[in-house]
Length: 80
Image 1 (cartoon, rainbow, N blue to C red):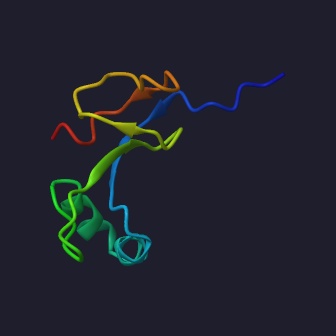
Image 2 (cartoon, rainbow, N blue to C red; image 1 turned 90 degrees about the vertical axis):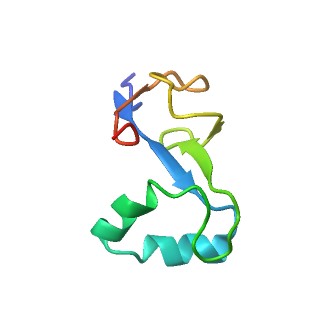
């Protein structure tokens, strides 16, 4: 049996609104980098939530080194 779990994942900021998610996905790479620093969605003003990119579970902060749900190690992309 092979392990398909990634060794490193990252924390992603997302909006609960699916319409906003489509708009965010259409942003350029430079704009998506800027988006990582936002607290609120620029399209609907809802507070953005943090999720593990690997298991898609919600997180309470960016100071975790490992996901408490799936155990994958986080990179430091939101620490900058």
